[in-house]
Image (cartoon, rainbow, N blue to C red; front, side, top):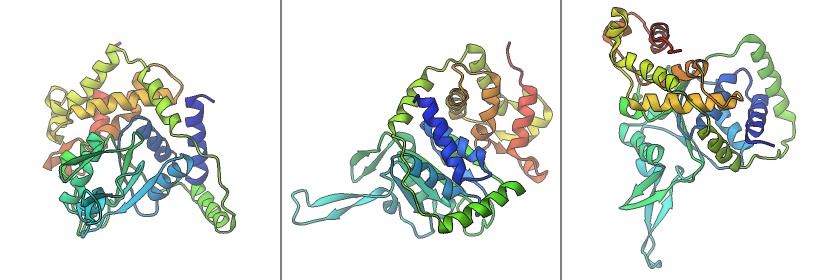
Length: 320
């Protein structure tokens, strides 16, 4: 079985337990293959936690769930040194839950900035520094942070600099009525069905897929298209007065990098060895929506980042 066939099988198996959230499944796998991290936003009960658990169940890897609360400390995430007088080194580092493969940072906006920032080094550098020592993360590592768009009282919104660390910001909504019916039946079956140990995919599949994704070609025109889309968020007045009135600050170079990595992964997952404009358009919203800072006027008029990106796609032409 090839790496692509294994990934498609992974997607199929996850779809059996995650009903009506096909986009969520696709984005989870895409971010994992792109070696990035994902911020997931949706109302309670929309299978955010279930999705990451399903991914961990299908892969032969570890999963840590960290429930973010106002009293959480950075050491609760990274770990801490414990004094042991009988040991030669006296202090022994006790690893925290961040030392796993898949990390579910549940309701990340419930904790203060100093706790949120404990994830930054692990997300960006794939390492944790404690008491002057550096500890490397596992090669298979991804943070899935969730946040609830309602109940904002007592929360700590993520700073723009931290939002920028996420490869994608994915928004999910309610399933349709047919999917809701399937969810009811699935839940009923799971209450009485015996749990069967399914064969898990080896993490080597992910590493092999990443090697193949590195070989996906992206032409100079497609690179220029990505750069032009990001440039439009920084200098919107070149395109229209309306765009200029909506955007205060545009995307950083991380936005361009995220679109490049994500579009190549999207092309590979669809059986192509090159990137075309459709692959870029398929990922642009998730890669840029959390990297735009809208103006007061845009917020007052109820303009969303997705509407701004839609307008940018209309304004920016593809070079043939």
